[in-house]
Length: 298
Image (cartoon, rainbow, N blue to C red; front, side, top):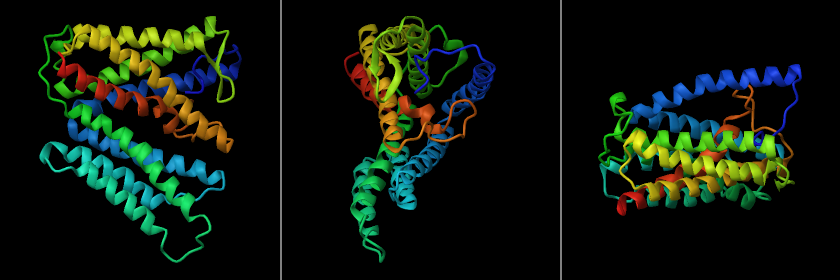
């Protein structure tokens, strides 16, 4: 997220911006925790996130003179979420079917009568935009569906459902990594990490975020009773510590290419929903596959 590692002045505008950010966080965190507690709520939250994020992404692209197709893009994103949601009910490869239909239908849509001078670009942006948002966010549905028995953790009295602990792991690792990167970069940042894409990011901030990501994943094992080893947790944390900044920089690349600062203004003090989920889009799938490997070798 573009604000990570940023230094700030004590101006009234900065103070007001911080207050808006904190208010939004105070609302968002309990909402996400509640959504993660029940599988149907998780599926619904992911679906809403997919719709809002694709709308924002395609609006950004249109500002750059590009022509992604919103309707087909939403179909692609939601079909991938639906395939993930239905996975426990059938052994049929619904994800493969969704991808196959997405490729064929989005290309076929460009055959409809219209000016086809930008059809190839429109097809590519529609398909990749839908997959970028829909496929990566569907990892949160898959995480919520994990039903591996938990150990007795320190937070066991809270009665956290089995699948929900993995969602909370993603949130904790991503948010604490981002916060650590901000504060360490603000205090010690000297070497720019990506001066063109995100000038305020520093390697010192990245290092601080990496340490926080690893420690959070390791500490989560006894807290949540995760059925993986501490070594596996540390590796998952390290992978997420790399994936989070990459997801952030990936969205920055899109915005810089078009010339916009924020993806939208849906969340006061934070910008658009894409600005808040850019890191999560990468850490969610990385942690999901890391957990599968961790459970395999536990």
